[in-house]
Image 1 (cartoon, helix red, strand yellow):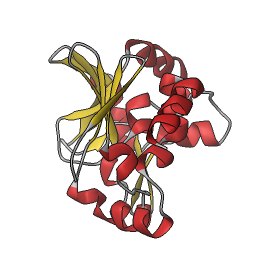
Image 2 (cartoon, one colour):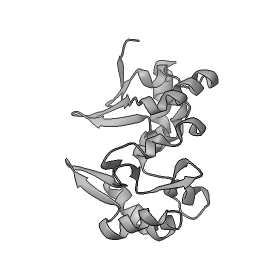
Image 3 (cartoon, rainbow, N blue to C red):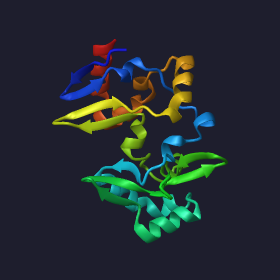
Length: 187
């Protein structure tokens, strides 16, 4: 597969996003995107720190005790390499991970789905497996992880591309008009 880019409104988009089939399969991956080994958690925007801080008491209702203690001791975010990120617990799980059986899920999203807050989750998480880089302008690319192989298999079965899988997140990040423009360009 050749990797090309298209540009829409000064945003470069990698062709893998509309050429690769992808549908999360939590039963198989167990929420691996939230528990990958790293001292760095999910990228955050400045305004997301404020929003999460506002809702933190509600979000904490969903968290395991160990995660609450990490937040109490060190906070939920930190800055490294000029980026803001969530903390991870034991260099593994995002500090906002909660578990349903053996599946890692987002406590922020659970609070949102339960109607307790009006913020679904950080945009970097909502867009996953799309990552936004900035090299003199925004570049959207598909970030590949072996843990997501089940999503590629399920995506083939559902015939759902990364673009379609992430459509709501793309609309949230860049607007419905921008998403429609991409659709027109790629067909």
